[in-house]
Length: 132
Image (cartoon, rainbow, N blue to C red; front, side):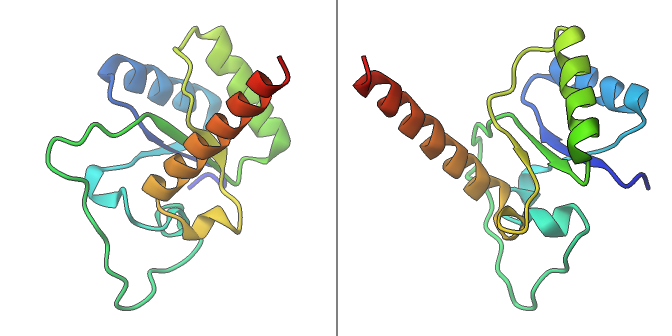
């Protein structure tokens, strides 16, 4: 396995196919997050940590509309810049939920990460509006 890994989830199959092709073109391993993994710690999914014994995992409710997400694992600054430039050049639609795997968020599930990203986006929007 390549050292770098892209974890992803896309509702749009065309977007998913384009991102998978981009990962192959750049020589990056990629792994789609299944709905059953939405509450598993990201570090476990990225292979950087093991599942704590007895840790219960939830499941999204039936028919849940899971948001698009990309998590960059062990990619490094240069690899991240290269991926993002190629993503933009390929004209793939923007993915709002993007993050780099860190020691802190490695313990979070994808659901927790998306919630945090939503809260950060809302805080930035409030801050920008208050300056106007």
